[in-house]
Image 1 (cartoon, one colour):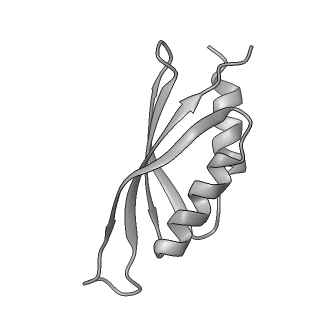
Image 2 (cartoon, one colour):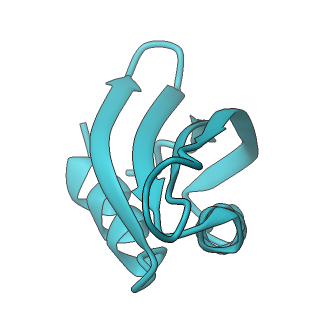
Image 3 (cartoon, rainbow, N blue to C red):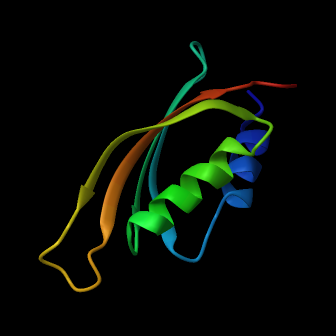
Length: 88
C-alpha cells in the first residue's frame, strides 16, 4: 500500500490550530476516518478545507464535532471521513 502518499497528504493539510489524533484507514474500501482536536470551530473547519484540497483525498466530510464549552478557548473535537485515492 502507498502509505507514504497518504501520510504526506495528511501532513500537508496540517494547521497550527488543529491536531490529528487518530487515523483509521481501510485500504480495501478506500475509506478513511480521522479524529482530531482544534483550538476552536474555525480551526476545525480550516483543517477540513485543507484536507479537501489534497489530491489523495476526496469526499471529505465532517461527521461529528463537539465544542467543549467548559474548557478555556472552547476547543473542538472532531471526526472526519474521506475517500482515499490509492495511487501507486
